[in-house]
Image 1 (cartoon, rainbow, N blue to C red):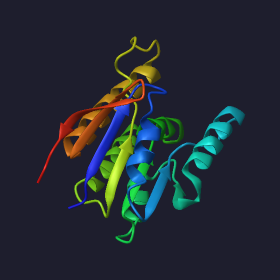
Image 2: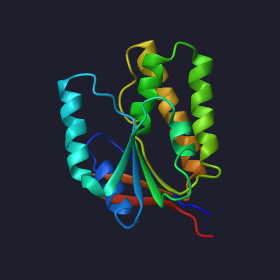
Image 3: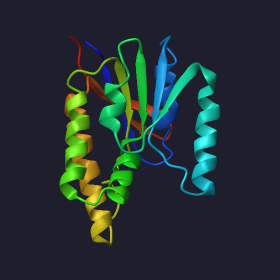
Image 4: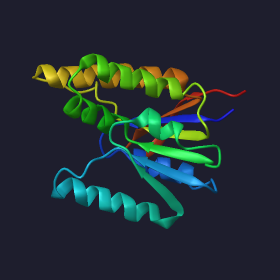
Length: 175
């Protein structure tokens, strides 16, 4: 049965670096990138991530259909890193008009965690530890992220929280 690892934490806490380090132990690696190059700063961040991964990773860019990207991996992939779920949620809120369609996309992704085609390392942000967002959209995003993170954590075999570059194991299941 494939192993699902969820890596969460605050911004710039080392989540992506840790995910790549875990993935480096596998032979056939795929990176599912959710970020869109919407401006020069984001393009530079994406370029830095690509350079950090190097050529040993196959990259799949998928800003909206995360369930489809996981479903398309096939069993010849040993591990896939998904980076990052909160960026994906922001994309959904930006591009998808219907709240029901957003919920459907989240449900479809969570369903892929029941039987993934390979080990998954999922990166997400912990966004609920700060102030209450001032806008309805901000509060909706925070609520969706918190609910999605909880659902992913329940499905995951291992959950790691990053604090200042230090991974702290908060859940580990063994079969």
